[in-house]
Every structure is written in C-alpha cells, then in structure tokens.
Length: 463
Image (cartoon, one colour):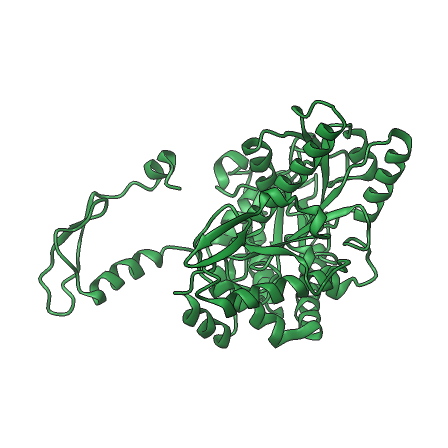
C-alpha cells in the first residue's frame, strides 16, 4: 500500500534520464505515469534492476522470519507454476491436489483427529490464516450465544501483548474487543493465569503463540489449555484455543516432539503456520488447519460456480499463483520428516551458538538463547550508558547487516533489545561474520561519550 507518508519519505524526481544503452538515445521517462511509447525489454529490466539494488541483501537480514533461500530445483518449479491460478481448481486440478496433500500432511504433523480428509486450506500467509481462524471462532461463538438466547454483540479475544500485528488487524476489522494481557517483569509472553483472568462469556478464543516474534519463546499452550479447563469447570464457560504457530508450527514437531501444544489438546480448535517462514518456502504461502469439520462453520464456505465447476472456497482473496503451494509440496517431498528435523536443528545450533558467543562478549544480557525458535533477543546491561542497542543496530548496517532494535510493549517499554532470527541459509560461517562485525563495532561504540540514537531516531523497524 503506497501510503502518503511513505511517498513523501521516498520522494524522487518526477522523471528519470534513461542511460543510452543498446544504441538508444538517452531520453527522459516519467516515474509516476505511463510512458508515451514502449521501451525495449532490456532497458525496462535495467531500470528496475538498478533501482532494486538499493534494497538490503536479504541473506544478511536477520530481522525477517521469512525464507530468503531455496534450492535451485524449487526455484525452477516455482517459475513453472507462476502462471497457474491457485483458485482455478477446475483448470489446474493437480495443483489443487497438491494443496490438499499439504493440508493433510500438516494435519498429521499436528495430530489432528482426521488426517486423510483434513479441514484446512492454503493462504497468502499467516496473517490471512489468522483472519480465517478468527472469523470461524467468532461465528461459532455467535451461534452458541444465539442458540442459548443470549446477546452476541460484544465478542472479545484474549492474547498476550506480544502477538503479531495481524491479530490487531483481525480485532479491528471484525469488530472484536482485543484483550491484551500485558507483560509483567521478566515474563514476556502469555501466561495461563493472565489468559484466564481476561476471559468471560463473551470470549471467542484465547490465542496462544508458539514462538513469540519478540524473543522467540514458546507460550505454554498445554498449561493455558489446562487453566481454561479449570475455568470451564468453575464457570461453565467453554473457551477454545487457537495456536498461532506462524513459526513454531514448523519447528516444534521436528525438534520438540514431546512438547504437547497441538491437536492432542482437545481445547485447540485451529492452528496456523507460515509456509514461507520455517516451512522454508519463499514469501506468499500460509496454512490454516481446523481440528475437524465442525470447527469451521459451513456457512463461511462459499461454493462458487467457476469455469464450469462448483468450487468450495474460504479465503479473503481470490486469484493467486500456485507456485508457492507447489514449492511447499516440493519441500515436504524433498525433505521428509528427517530432512526438516536436520534443517531446523542446524538453525537452532547456529542460534544457540551465536547467542552464547554474544553472551561471552560482556555488555549483553540475553533474554532468550535460541533454544526454542532459532531466534534470540538480547539487551545491553544496565551499566552500559554511552551507547544503545539502536546505535549498534545502525552501526551493523554499515556492513549490510539488518539486525532490528526495538522496545517491548506496554508495561515493558523500558526494555530495548536486538533480535537475531536464524533461518535456512544462515550458516555457522555467517554467524561468525556477524559476531566479528559486532566486536568491531563495539570497539568503536565503547569510545563514544553518549548515545546517539534512540527508538525514535534510529530505525523504521516495527513489530
């Protein structure tokens, strides 16, 4: 979305002078309206290519959870599927079959009661998946209230203050009161006690996050469910749980098989994950799986007559390429359980190793160590007062590293941290390079008299 504020910030000249390439005379072309005539493809490519060189190097971006590396065979497969419309299941039935297989694979991985005909679908990412989960939860709650002859005009949803912004969007767009459980002390995610304290008869669900984006920690899903079981016995109020497994949904099954967080817990109604995060696919695919067909109200499913076939659909968009779904199935086929386990274990090993090395440097306090998600956050020790995490973040950009610095939510806005996300393609060697650059920049920062940047001036990073 080209917001006006962004346009002002990135203002450029109204036109640009085309370089005299390929024996063409130099000419000026407009930036913000169509050119009068065509350009040769080589010239159009060069113009766009040159502008995009100003973007950061995705492989050096340890801020993003999104995959930045895939195998050449997967890239080739995606190229072959770019022209396939995922929504057109009549014209591209095999792409639709791959989507169904992926849903069944995830249902099996997450111990759903029914795995051969699981209820779920692909999405453009976890944000859309969260919206679909929230819609189903709200509709189920409303139907129960109306069947009991009770008002259904004040729904709320409970979650920790550390949730991703997509849940704020859901609450805003679908007019659901968002009850955020604040962080307290050194507890940086949702607790069972905090969840129950915010629930009442109008609560459509509690959202538990398997892998907080703030520090990479898992929320205690089983304990939250147990607390809600006790709450139901006392009050008679049945509150379902949705697990936001955007990242952890593709890590915990392989590295923490004894951790009970999924459909093994009867209170878990639905789970989402991002195929383009630890599902190891390039951006553009998420997944949502419901416990069973009853967890997804039938009236939310549209049956569309499209190109001669009746097609069920539950989505917030319509046309989208099938490339990411094909790539997801490629990964499932290529890696299998053991392959995913090895890839995720390598990422965890890199994360825990780098966290330990940074801890040994002296000026840092680690909040997490990368032993749940391969993600960790660290702050400066209180006695460090001549530079900030924002100074270090900007200093590392000089070498191309994108290491985000940010403050925590309400109740802990005093806490400013740096965070490192280790993904496939980020190797031990790259971790060594990052560590060397941190050491190099610390030598310089330790000599400065006072901080030069804070949260307001340092970075555009937003959670």
